[in-house]
Amino acid sequence: MTTISMYEASIPTFLHTLTSLKNILQKGIASAEARKFDSNVLASSRLFPDMFPLTRQVQIASDAAKGAAARLAGIEPPKFEDTETTLAELVTRIDRTVDFIKSVKPEQIDGSEDREIVLKTPRGELKFKGLVFLRHWALPNFFFHVTTTYNLLRHAGVEIGKQDFLGGSLLN
Amino acid sequence: MTTISMYEASIPTFLHTLTSLKNILQKGIASAEARKFDSNVLASSRLFPDMFPLTRQVQIASDAAKGAAARLAGIEPPKFEDTETTLAELVTRIDRTVDFIKSVKPEQIDGSEDREIVLKTPRGELKFKGLVFLRHWALPNFFFHVTTTYNLLRHAGVEIGKQDFLGGSLLN
Image (tube, rainbow over all chains, first blue to last red; front, side, top):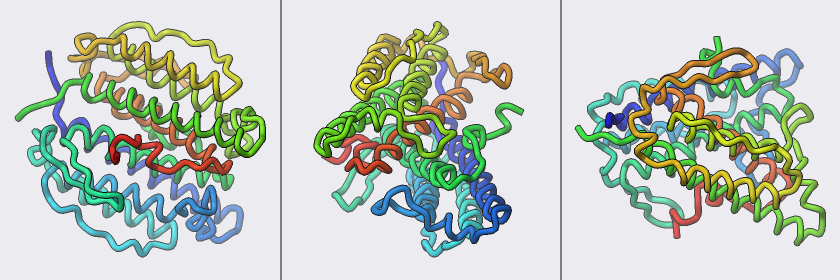
């Protein structure tokens, strides 16, 4: 039986889908321009009054990705101030997130499947082994917030399709 | 360096999140009962007129999960007729999906990282190696449709939170 490494099971997913998220946001900016409204309206949009707005969805997706890369590598995640208010600023944040994730090397992450990961949450401390953290916390959280960003833009009439989410290069 | 297996990188994720999806749908049923409307209204709800309704979101999430398990194992995915029209029928579909996925054994999936997977799509044939298929097709597709189901229910005022998506047992 052959096997795969923790790096191969994690980092390419984040990098691939962050690129999709950036493209989706850029289509949001273009859509607002074409329809002649301020794209900040999209940045503050929500699917329900007590849900987070789009801005926060992207910030959390960024945090989930850089947090996963850092925690699996056993280093401190870089802290980004959550000051973005425009789609263009969110695109820049994704670029910064990608730069950090690319700086983490396979040898830092490989072997982390049994590494103890401790998360502090408002509801208490969570302890995971690395593989369980990746599978049941980091990846679901990341995809949740990227998909919700997609749904917010789609709900606002931005012309995107699932291919934009999956990443166009797969079918080209 | 230690490594992980393809089974460990895939099947527990599908089983864990299908359980969350089932719980979320059951909260949708309970919410409709409490608010005295037919829960079929939720089953046919959409976030935008040309998006799929909730029913189809759940069917595709089911297909993504059972399709991934089968294709990585090198067997034919079971075909489920897409006849569900109620949330209760969708819950049953998730149970059937879980039953199939549990029938696939680690020894069928382990070693599939380099297996060639061929998908027929409306836009042509897609070929992946097993690991790329899992990372860039199966998992994103699956999480996309589970999250969109969550967003549809949340948008309709069903009282669910991200903890229901992540799976409550993580924090209890």
